[in-house]
Image (cartoon, rainbow, N blue to C red; front, side):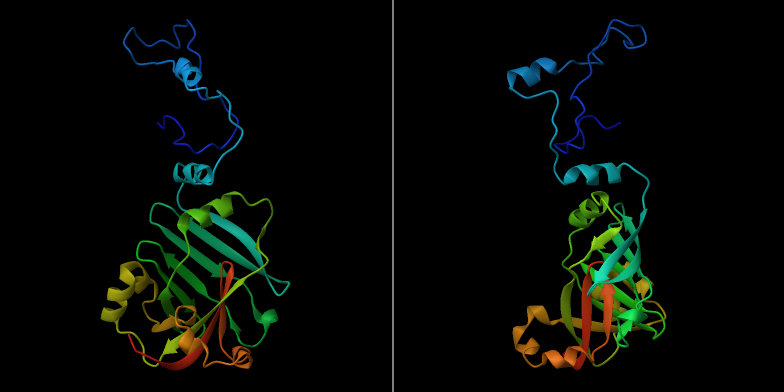
Amino acid sequence: MLVGDFNSRTASDIDFSNIVNSKHDIVSDSDLCYDYSNVLQELNMLSIRKNYNDFGPLLIASGSCSPENFRVTVKVDGKPVNEDLVLDLEKKTFLVNVGEVNHLGPNWSKTINLHDFNVKRLALKKVDDGICYVTLMTENLTEISARLHNMTSQIFATNLTKHVYQLSNTNMSNENLLAYAGPKITNFCHGYKSIYAHRLEHDMNLRRRFAPAEAAKAPTVLCSCSEHIMYEGNNQDK
């Protein structure tokens, strides 16, 4: 049983219930029930609050069945792409199954992506090519959960963030992958060529080497609400 809402207002319900003289409401004469209405009055707090913060939807989700499934649509330059999302707050993972992307261009590939918030790592798996890109992740689990639970339509994102990566020259060994990304992503990428992707937003010296025209030729994949452009390069192997 959850008592209180931990400052996570989700509706306009009252903060307490009045205890009435009923045999069904009073279990015994022991101090099992307390009426805190007088405390609210002393603190000048209203018994009904209509505002809530982003932790309210997260609290609801944590008390519901886990994992949760969502079907959403994102817009890439105005073109829709369907995604199937699986949010598991208990395991702290977020799975993204990207739908058809052929209409976006020849460089786009469908992927299945796993966010592991336990180790802050992201794996983007190209099933047709047998490749699993592995990189650092900056997304926030609480923010993703709040966005999903506050959606008012199927459109999840219209303005996508673009991230640019430089790929390692060699495949990651199983030992290196386990050390870098943990057991969940290692198991997720099992049977695939695991390639480390270095995010160039964190290294402006490397990013200046690539002209914008090269982006049109580089493999591109989609993940929830961001584009990932993958360059082949001479980045230090992992």
